[in-house]
Image (cartoon, rainbow, N blue to C red; front, top):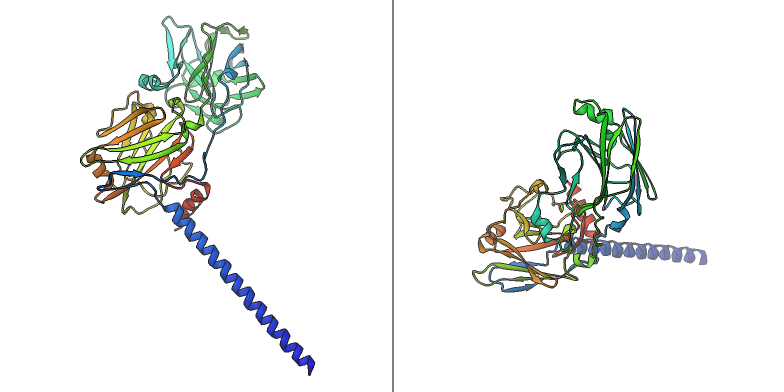
Length: 431
């Protein structure tokens, strides 16, 4: 009799335990779903919106991380040249470079080698033809170097190791490389302050449909990536089976400050608008932007309601995925160098040719101003504002800021944290 009661009690206990487990599972599942829905809603929310008639909007900062990306920087003095030695045979050249510091950082260190025969006329090479851009930077930049020989082959070594984009060899076209990466057949050995490059001269001059000159001059130059040249040394008239070493230079090396990443953190973003007057997008950073050589601002404008279906776009560096498709965007490369684009509702591709232009025309109805200290403003005319809204009554502003050629350091107007970036990429991956 008691055995039957015990069994019945055990059955009730088991059933009760199963119900408890099921209840816990349901609560956990509901919690997971609630967290997921909240995360998706949070990652989709645009927190900097201006509506018709709104006079002043203080935007909410959703950035949960102070900085998304802080690319490692190196001291410019690391790339001061102490000696360059060239050893030649008829088919190749070995260039041994001794630096004051070391070649270690592909983020902001570059080596260049220029090859050519003696030239009766002066020869120079410039990193950019955009003089206004260099005028906007707060420190002197060595944009141009003078070569005591022709520029027949240009070699760019962008990293101390094997990477897909380096080295770059320019032989027949000064803008687009003939050979890149493994196809360059150039070996790079970096050990402390010693760098050794081995160049296949015969292969390079064969592309010029010419024999390797009996006398060949070499100029080695160092540079901070996206900024300017640091130092240069030339070794002239090196014959086949000859070795020459040079340590003298015509001018002292240049120095560049390290980037202050506080200038990439947006503290406030305010939208100011009066009837008939341009919209003022006023931003304030933690410290003034003094280094425009390493700073880009990107403003993206999203019409509301957003009736543009399709995958979510990425920022120009393809590092983060934006929460909505934009109708207009402006890139500020320096106070007097802007590029703006409207997609006419269906073209969401980015401009890829701005870096090859010596001048950017000022966009109509757009102006960027330095207000003093760490405050800046982008003015948008009423006509451009109507294009942005695409027939709607409001639009949101998204902002990313970072180094030229790298992912954003910070953002404003949306949640750009890693979790949200992953969720947006998953959304794009879904059918």
